[in-house]
Image (tube, rainbow, N blue to C red):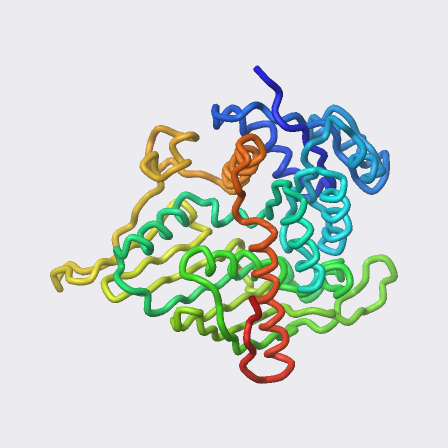
Amino acid sequence: GMSGPGFGLIGTGFMGRAHAIALHEVAVVFDDIARPRAVCVSDRDDERAGRAAAELRFERATGDWRSLLKDPAIDVLDICTPNHLHFEMARAALAAGKHVYCEKPLALDVREAATLAAAARESGAVHGLGLNYTANPMAQVARELIAAGEIGDVVHFTGRYFEDYMADRDGPFTWRCERALAGAGALADLGSHLVNMLHFLVGRPQRVLGEVHIAIPERRDPATGALRRVENEDIARALIELESGVPATLEISRVATGRKCGLTFEVYGTRGSIAFDQERMNELKLYGAGQAAARAGYQTILAGPAHGDYARFCPSPGHGLGINDLKVIELHNFIRAVECGEGFYPDFDEGLAVQRVMAAIETSGAERAWVDVEH
């Protein structure tokens, strides 16, 4: 049938590869879109880009990402580069009339994020951010249960995102440790997902009391062999008052030894509660108040075809989805938006809202005081 939007992918690391897998899979899983084209892939030089094109099955390769902006075969610029490049690339793509699919965080700071969100709104293009955990059918079910009042009025939210990819004291200094390249540390990398989940499930923060902490202050630079000072946080914590008045707590760490993808949340209501752990991403725990005392407890709901997009992947419950499937769902939503002129969530406005919360947590930590989140 008709060929779908043409994609130009920049960056071929962990996320670039995940995006490529989704590009090739999405039209097989979802039959309501035209098949997107993997037109051109770009990396920091021609050789790396050429290797990536062969491995990830793109039609062409280039070492010059700007050439994608002028390419009429490319409808969507797909940005999977280190954080500091998002701003320049996304802004250039919007100016060139391309749709933009960008990995999180949106930018390095609120000023950059606000500039991008405004440019995206004015462009009329579809703009999306790779905050893929809210695309999990079990997160969608949690949202629906909360919205339908199944757990009564929400009285408390608590969430964590713990990973251990920088728990090793002897691990190298990477771009993720450098303010000019990464922005914040654990907050930008992991906290962006957690704040998006908070927004998605229960609403936006009004005020925060935050603190950031560097657990491993120095790491060895593999290029020079010298010790370098880590410039952003390993751990972030925040007490939050939502706009609804509900209290929330967030805790984020990139040095949580043993945790691999520990995005967890618990939502407590007057008539029950919901608990979720992304390491067990195909399970949702639901507690209903008023059960007989002798057998009161949480029910485990296993992901299955009754839960939204799961059915497209598998006709049987309990067989499970994986992280790449969340990228397929996310990309499907994005292509639907391009084809149908619908909005995409999470978009650059959500990216800006997330950035504002992260900035407030850092500011609060520096000032040792409650800080209002601007919206």
